[in-house]
Length: 210
Image (spheres, rainbow, N blue to C red):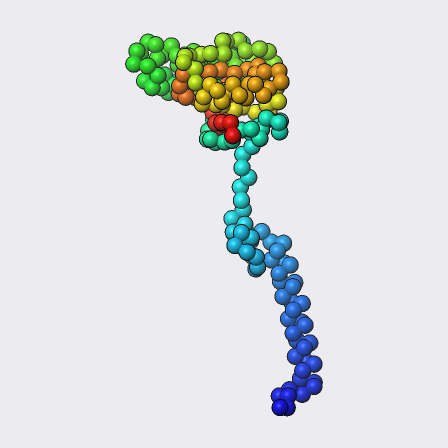
């Protein structure tokens, strides 16, 4: 069977194929350097190109401690109220919005309002402790039975964290070489949130042991 192409036609065809291959490689290299789209790859590679994978939050502590805890709930939104006023001015009046939270704490209105005021003041003085590099001015246990604990300062810790069980906090404390130097515990999560308002900080992420 004779070849349907002449020798010259075959050489021209090979040249065009080589040019096409060169163009294809350049196109793929250009697409690979772009942050959009994909040209090849398995499903994982294509998914990564379509939607970048977000990094998982890491416990803000030295590696020896960090890998022992897993995230339960992400941190709340950034605090957007008035900035921390300074130690001299004290906690100031309790915002009306926080007074309304008393209904979630106790059926006794007087008792509930007292717990709100204590939580707010404890948060303020905790922040004052951070700002002045001093020890906290208030007892670490604000209400009982204590369950929810927020930690603002501890050996090996590089941020604020919270726990929703006494044994979870205790495990963290046991891992700290010099212990926990600034923390507060509450009977309810509501009190912890009011505390954060007093400290002018976001509610930290919630963690538990792995």
